[in-house]
Structure formats: structure tokens, C-alpha cells
Image 1 (tube, one colour):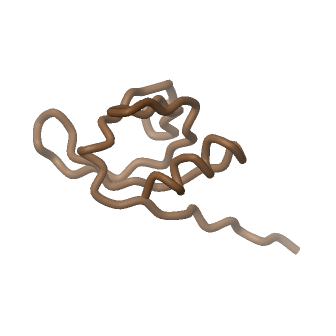
Image 2: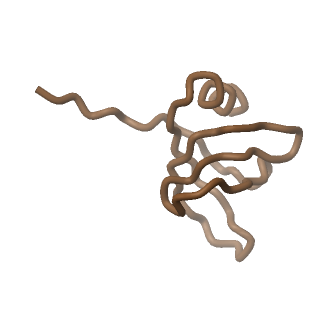
Amino acid sequence: MIGLLHHSLDKKEKIMIYYIDRHNNVTQRVIRVVGIDDKRILAYCYYKKQVRSFKIENILSIGCVKRSVGA
């Protein structure tokens, strides 16, 4: 999981996370990581359209965002 976070940071690529928010709701977010420390990541959230902080312990799952291929 940490490897995908670092990949997003290094390559400036979008990833999708499933996250438990402060109200204990599971949310799906498409983000691009801009910073990582021991307990949190700082990421641009495409849903909120702003930089947000996410607790690493609250991230349930991480995946790659599929790119569409045009003609």
C-alpha cells in the first residue's frame, strides 16, 4: 500500500482510495499524493477539488485509476 502512495507521489499519478472519514463513513476518492509522513498523506482530492490530509491508518484500499484510450 505504501508503495502505491510513493508511486503516486513520484510519478504525479492519480490513484483511487477507499477511506474511513471522521464520521466513520467509507468514501471513495481519486487523489494525487503531494506529501507523505509517518501517519498522514497530503493529497489533491479530485472530489473536493482541494488539497486534503488523509490518515494512513484510515485508508482501507488503494488502486490505480484506469486511463481511457482515445482514437
